[in-house]
Amino acid sequence: MNNKVSLIILLLLLLAGCANEQGIKVPIRPALDKGLRDMQPIPVHTGLFIEPSLRQWTQEEWQTSMIVGIHHYLFPIGEPLAKNIEEMTRKVFSEVTILNELPSHETVRKEELDAVLTIQLMESQLALIVEDSVWRAIGKHDLSIQATFLDKHFMKIFDEKLTVEGKHLDVIDFETEGGWWRTSGPKYGPAVEDSIEKIVFQLAQKLLASDKQIGNQ
Image (tube, rainbow, N blue to C red; front, side, top):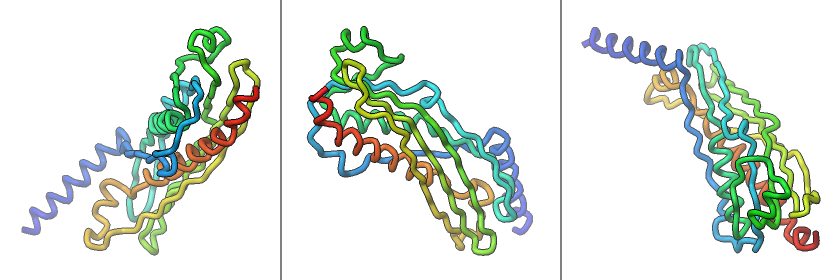
């Protein structure tokens, strides 16, 4: 029996090592703030341009610890961030057109847009901390974007850098004696989800506050 258990543990460690060579893809599934789900949208047709570099952003991180060993993580941050921004803008505005290139006056006329929102990724910094003595992990994600909101005449309604910090605490499950931590690593995805949810809500508040400005431009 002991030989079988040892063999299973060895196989798990080998599988974990193979996964680390390619990187463990961290699932990131942010949710839209509940306050935006049932709101009455602003009657404005907005064009949304998200820079391709943001949409494609994947962050690579390594971690070494006495408890978890060596782990290689891949954080596909850009795609869920872009989707969450798109979902939010469709809640805030009555009509949204996704733009594949930087908007121009011709685009505004052709699509009959009332406003244009452009989004750039400015910073994405991850801190992956394992506190060996208490068997817990802390994930921190500093995220910032540049959001520019223009009226149909390309006059700025606002142009701001939005910054947030996402956090998550992951404590060891003593029933497994840390087994899943060693093979799959601590859960750091929720820290990224927290930062995405915060920054998208912050952006939503900026857009909602600019309702009257759109009509006055």
